[in-house]
Length: 139
Image 1 (tube, rainbow, N blue to C red):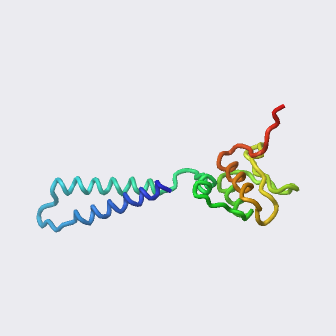
Image 2 (image 1 turned 90 degrees about the vertical axis):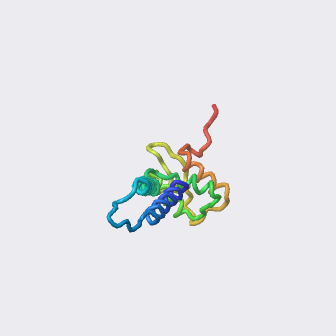
Protein backbone atom coordinates (compact mmCIF):
# COMPACT_ATOMS: atom_id res chain seq x y z
CA UNK A 1 0.00 0.00 0.00
CA UNK A 2 2.80 2.41 0.86
CA UNK A 3 4.51 1.67 -2.46
CA UNK A 4 1.40 2.69 -4.36
CA UNK A 5 1.05 5.95 -2.44
CA UNK A 6 4.73 6.78 -2.97
CA UNK A 7 4.35 5.96 -6.68
CA UNK A 8 1.32 8.23 -6.93
CA UNK A 9 3.26 11.06 -5.26
CA UNK A 10 6.12 10.61 -7.74
CA UNK A 11 3.72 10.78 -10.68
CA UNK A 12 2.20 14.00 -9.30
CA UNK A 13 5.69 15.50 -8.81
CA UNK A 14 6.60 14.64 -12.38
CA UNK A 15 3.44 16.28 -13.72
CA UNK A 16 4.05 19.42 -11.66
CA UNK A 17 7.68 19.63 -12.82
CA UNK A 18 6.63 19.22 -16.44
CA UNK A 19 3.97 21.92 -16.17
CA UNK A 20 6.30 24.44 -14.55
CA UNK A 21 9.05 23.79 -17.10
CA UNK A 22 6.89 24.36 -20.15
CA UNK A 23 7.57 27.90 -21.36
CA UNK A 24 7.38 29.56 -24.71
CA UNK A 25 11.01 30.04 -25.65
CA UNK A 26 10.71 31.32 -29.19
CA UNK A 27 13.75 30.35 -31.23
CA UNK A 28 15.56 28.83 -28.26
CA UNK A 29 14.91 25.11 -27.87
CA UNK A 30 15.58 25.06 -24.15
CA UNK A 31 18.12 25.80 -21.47
CA UNK A 32 20.22 23.23 -19.65
CA UNK A 33 18.23 23.62 -16.43
CA UNK A 34 14.98 22.94 -18.24
CA UNK A 35 16.44 19.84 -19.91
CA UNK A 36 17.62 18.40 -16.60
CA UNK A 37 14.28 19.13 -14.96
CA UNK A 38 12.39 17.45 -17.79
CA UNK A 39 14.67 14.42 -17.53
CA UNK A 40 14.09 14.28 -13.75
CA UNK A 41 10.31 14.61 -14.31
CA UNK A 42 10.34 11.76 -16.83
CA UNK A 43 12.39 9.62 -14.44
CA UNK A 44 9.95 10.33 -11.58
CA UNK A 45 7.03 9.45 -13.84
CA UNK A 46 8.48 6.10 -14.88
CA UNK A 47 9.51 5.14 -11.33
CA UNK A 48 6.08 6.22 -10.04
CA UNK A 49 4.29 4.04 -12.57
CA UNK A 50 6.48 1.07 -11.68
CA UNK A 51 5.77 1.52 -7.97
CA UNK A 52 2.04 1.90 -8.57
CA UNK A 53 1.81 -1.32 -10.55
CA UNK A 54 1.15 -4.45 -8.56
CA UNK A 55 4.38 -6.34 -9.07
CA UNK A 56 3.97 -9.42 -6.89
CA UNK A 57 1.59 -11.41 -4.78
CA UNK A 58 0.11 -9.45 -1.95
CA UNK A 59 -0.28 -10.97 1.46
CA UNK A 60 -3.90 -9.97 1.88
CA UNK A 61 -4.36 -11.79 5.19
CA UNK A 62 -1.38 -10.01 6.75
CA UNK A 63 -2.69 -6.63 5.57
CA UNK A 64 -6.06 -7.40 7.16
CA UNK A 65 -4.43 -8.38 10.45
CA UNK A 66 -2.37 -5.17 10.49
CA UNK A 67 -5.47 -3.08 9.81
CA UNK A 68 -7.41 -5.08 12.42
CA UNK A 69 -10.11 -5.73 9.85
CA UNK A 70 -11.69 -9.06 10.64
CA UNK A 71 -13.91 -10.88 8.14
CA UNK A 72 -16.58 -13.12 9.56
CA UNK A 73 -18.08 -14.16 6.21
CA UNK A 74 -16.77 -17.54 5.08
CA UNK A 75 -17.12 -16.66 1.39
CA UNK A 76 -14.76 -13.72 1.84
CA UNK A 77 -12.28 -15.91 3.73
CA UNK A 78 -12.37 -18.46 0.89
CA UNK A 79 -11.86 -15.66 -1.63
CA UNK A 80 -8.82 -14.40 0.28
CA UNK A 81 -7.36 -17.91 0.36
CA UNK A 82 -7.91 -18.32 -3.41
CA UNK A 83 -6.32 -14.94 -4.19
CA UNK A 84 -3.28 -15.92 -2.13
CA UNK A 85 -2.84 -19.10 -4.18
CA UNK A 86 -4.02 -21.74 -1.74
CA UNK A 87 -6.01 -24.81 -2.83
CA UNK A 88 -9.49 -25.18 -1.33
CA UNK A 89 -10.87 -28.68 -0.80
CA UNK A 90 -14.61 -28.90 -0.06
CA UNK A 91 -16.64 -31.81 1.25
CA UNK A 92 -15.33 -32.29 4.77
CA UNK A 93 -17.51 -32.37 7.87
CA UNK A 94 -15.54 -29.69 9.71
CA UNK A 95 -15.41 -27.30 6.73
CA UNK A 96 -13.37 -26.37 3.69
CA UNK A 97 -9.72 -27.31 3.97
CA UNK A 98 -7.15 -24.77 2.83
CA UNK A 99 -4.11 -26.60 1.47
CA UNK A 100 -0.70 -25.81 0.07
CA UNK A 101 0.34 -28.91 -1.79
CA UNK A 102 -0.47 -31.87 0.47
CA UNK A 103 -0.26 -29.89 3.72
CA UNK A 104 -3.48 -28.62 5.30
CA UNK A 105 -2.92 -25.06 6.48
CA UNK A 106 -6.27 -24.34 8.11
CA UNK A 107 -9.98 -25.12 7.87
CA UNK A 108 -12.69 -22.57 7.07
CA UNK A 109 -15.99 -23.63 8.72
CA UNK A 110 -19.06 -24.54 6.65
CA UNK A 111 -21.24 -21.91 8.37
CA UNK A 112 -22.04 -18.63 6.65
CA UNK A 113 -20.50 -16.60 9.42
CA UNK A 114 -17.57 -17.50 11.62
CA UNK A 115 -18.35 -16.93 15.29
CA UNK A 116 -15.61 -15.67 17.54
CA UNK A 117 -12.83 -13.25 16.72
CA UNK A 118 -10.19 -15.75 17.87
CA UNK A 119 -11.19 -18.20 15.17
CA UNK A 120 -11.03 -15.48 12.51
CA UNK A 121 -7.62 -14.31 13.72
CA UNK A 122 -6.22 -17.85 13.74
CA UNK A 123 -7.46 -18.46 10.17
CA UNK A 124 -5.98 -15.16 8.95
CA UNK A 125 -2.68 -15.84 10.76
CA UNK A 126 -2.44 -19.28 9.17
CA UNK A 127 -3.13 -17.78 5.74
CA UNK A 128 -0.60 -14.98 6.23
CA UNK A 129 2.27 -17.15 7.50
CA UNK A 130 1.54 -20.28 5.49
CA UNK A 131 2.13 -22.42 8.59
CA UNK A 132 -0.44 -24.90 9.77
CA UNK A 133 -2.76 -23.68 12.51
CA UNK A 134 -3.22 -27.18 13.92
CA UNK A 135 -1.47 -28.31 17.08
CA UNK A 136 1.36 -30.73 16.64
CA UNK A 137 1.80 -33.65 19.00
CA UNK A 138 4.89 -33.36 21.20
CA UNK A 139 5.32 -37.11 21.62
